[in-house]
Amino acid sequence: MAKYLLALDQGTTSSRAILFTLEGGLVAMAQREFRQIYPAPGLVEHDPLEIWQTQLQTAQEVLARAGVAPGQVVALGITNQRETTLVWERATGKPLYNAIVWQDRRTAPLCDELKARGLEALFRERTGLVLDPYFSATKLLWLLENVPGLREKAERGEVCFGTVDTWLIYNLTGGKVHATDPTNASRTLLFNLHTLAWDEELLELLDLPKALLPEVYPSDGGFGEALPGLLGAPIPIRGVLGDQQAALFGQAALEAGQGKCTYGTGAFLLLNTGQRPVPPGKGLLTTVAWRLGDRATYALEGSIFIAGAAVQWLKDLGLIRESREVEALAREAEDSGGVYLVPAFTGLGSPHWDPYARGAIFGLTRGTTRAHLARAALEGVAFQVRDAFVAMEAAARGEGGSALRELRVDGGMAQSDLFLQIQADLLGVPVLRPKVTETTALGAALMAGVGAGVLALEEVKASWRESARFVPSLAQADREALYRGWQKAVARAMGWAKEG
Image 1 (cartoon, rainbow, N blue to C red):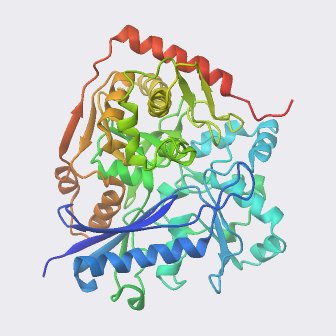
Image 2: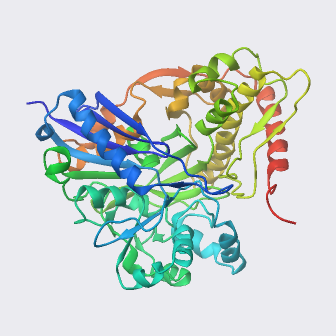
């Protein structure tokens, strides 16, 4: 009988399950969206039970759709929206609050307090991250301080904390396994990149009980088995990666100097830096790319909060009916007509890290059309990637490494030829789209195959195939002039929501 790998891809707006062959071929996919909860401006939550139920349903659906017996699935891999923070009762699995999503800005004042105490340098050195509401630790602290009785339960060891991977593992195994992997742990502000363990001093500084935390297994570790009653067989969970690291693995960027950008709700630029954590430099993050057995690989990351969400915003405004229409509308204009759209709807990530920045449009005239706005939205995403790319070049060269000579891309916006040409023009390097663009799920599946012993890393490399290449066509002088305009627009959008 043929053998398969199953990937659970739990994202910010939907849960998906994708079945792959051992060679990385896509067999079938199922997807379900779930609610986005906005209690107040800047606050974003999910229902943990909806996350679990939609993910389980898609896993069941994809097996049925493919006509594959559960026993034919060699291993299951999990990839997930990172930083999103959940707490639940250890004994029952009952959620104790909604999941606080990575986009949520409620802990900006708390991050300011920690910075005022002079702690940012310590957190940055230990974790590779900045003190920003994006990460899990301050979200967890907010929960302990604002959910009645939660701290007392946590100190008694009755509460589990986890990112989304941990929540799925707990439910898949019937509560037997409370675990995460280093890629997700390294997004919490609590994980020491050098020791690859939870940092006791940082936990103490934030007054977070260690009993809350999951165990950290290698990315290709044994995370237990899915209960037979859930998927029809006790499928081993053998690969766990945060979504952006999964995409890096799925893009076969396994060597230092290789990188990728994924365009989902946000956009995430990662550069493989090899076996040591490189100091992140201005505005970037250092993160664990994956850990195979006892060997860790690291990456530099540029995190951009709004990418596909900018296109969704155009849809919400009624400028387009479906997201796929944005390319046709943008093609009606030769350029953006001097319009700059800064999509800082939930603040700015790399390299600015300004939670108080807000979205803005500059350069409007009576001649501005819907097409100009659509093109400016696409350019606004590409300019943000350029910001992170410039910072990454500086950091890599400062450490004696080399910057990206080409960019492998994936995610929803990578389906748009116009957008990828804009991205190549604004970066000045070729942009490559692979044949399999579901690289996040593919990375999780391939990692599960490695964990299960049915794939070697050379086979992971061999699975990557180029589909299209976009070469820069914009003159250097024009590229730099456009970028100067973008920098002026960003400077005016920053700090907008800060009082005083």
